[in-house]
Length: 251
Image (cartoon, rainbow, N blue to C red; front, side, top):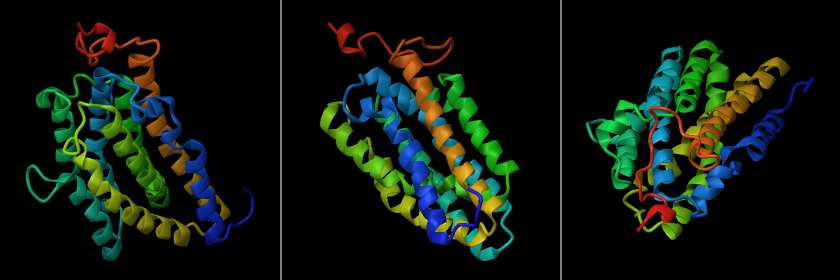
């Protein structure tokens, strides 16, 4: 890209990133949504994804602290409330823990992060560092994966409810709220990027920021696939599915 894009062309370029690079294309997600993982593999996914969920308000707090306009801060702080809740036991993080509870994982073990794969930790922390170190435009642009999330959420909920007898609607309650929160947040961020990326260089930086965020999500699934699907290499100290979690290990 060498010339200045119109706002509509910039939006099309950003959406194209999701078409090519969003993690709904990853083999692990296709297995997850298609009912081809066992309970131990689903537990590994939920446990490792917890760290990403837990750090979202940390990431958003970094962005909020850099916003000088009150109207921006008023809009962005809702993201923190959505994940932290107004009170103990509310918000997206609490709902994610109800998902891990429903999968039979010990809550203290999940929140201790002892079972994380290193790549999960490194990817999430790279994202937090990215939004702290890059421009505000790039930090906001990196959140635009939310443009693509409603489709993957609908696919995930339908596929998991259909294919796993250990999954219930209550277990997946986290995703119900995201079906309305994610489009609202994406619309705000997209409007900001389209109005503040005023040079070819800024537009390219915004596109690269969204590509980076897609990489963050993708590499977490790479690690899960390698550790728990093929070649099932695991990692010292990381979560190990219990005997009987796989169909071939059940009596």
